Amino acid sequence: MSQHREIFNQLLLAFDYSAKQVSGWTGIHQSRLSRFRTGKLDLEAGEFFSLLTCMPKEFQDTFWLKIRVEEADWRTRVLSASDNEIEEILRGLADRWASSVGPFKVAS
Image (cartoon, rainbow, N blue to C red; front, side):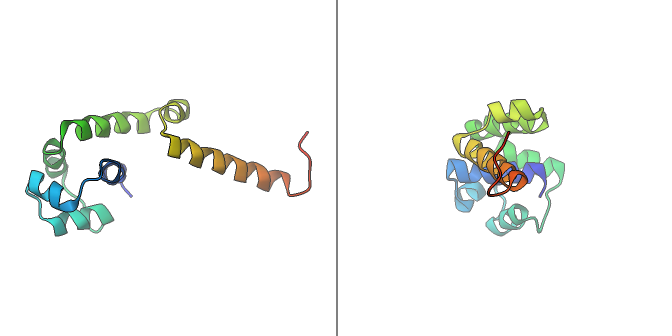
């Protein structure tokens, strides 16, 4: 999934915005938004930026912050992660450690 689409989808869920709301703000039909969100359609850069500028300011600010963080190194990404993201990171590390050590081995 494209980075801009993934972040856009994450933020729609985080801000609890409906397709109807977004369609009303942006003038983009709900079915077109749905196809964009599922990856069946990609918006041209100008259309996506127009979409983004119609969103509430807090949404826009968070979007650009996440875009900058996504481009940053892993340390910056971890430090700016949400509680849920930290939980996913820790579970992933624990799973990786467990698979490398095995169920009955003791780490040294």
